[in-house]
Length: 146
Image 1 (cartoon, rainbow, N blue to C red):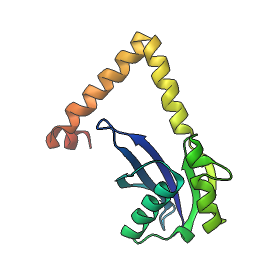
Image 2: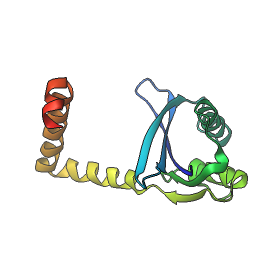
Image 3: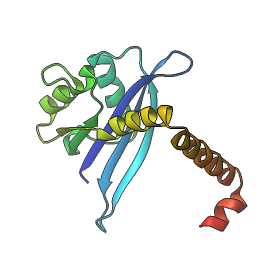
């Protein structure tokens, strides 16, 4: 099975650096599957710390970097750096793991910016969040929507 990785790091509310990892693959029926593998605390966001965390998560789930065919990161230089970023480190290990910028991050920034200046958009996202939380709080409500 060939895999793509989508990876991002951020500082959480407790001021700890964390890295999230998602893998994407195509199953035997040709369906694209995405799986959230987890969040890993990292000492810092240096290339070596991120690569070590990524390798640890891959080892935990029995995945091999040689099977990776794509990498998706935001625009941070430690991730996308052509010569010294995580994508370069992975490409050195596996020349078939091509890097593509993750545009979902940019889309999120645009949506946040629009919501700040347009009250109706802000209200839409708040109401949508409340509906989702209300439905998810009850198994019966979730089952009714299935």
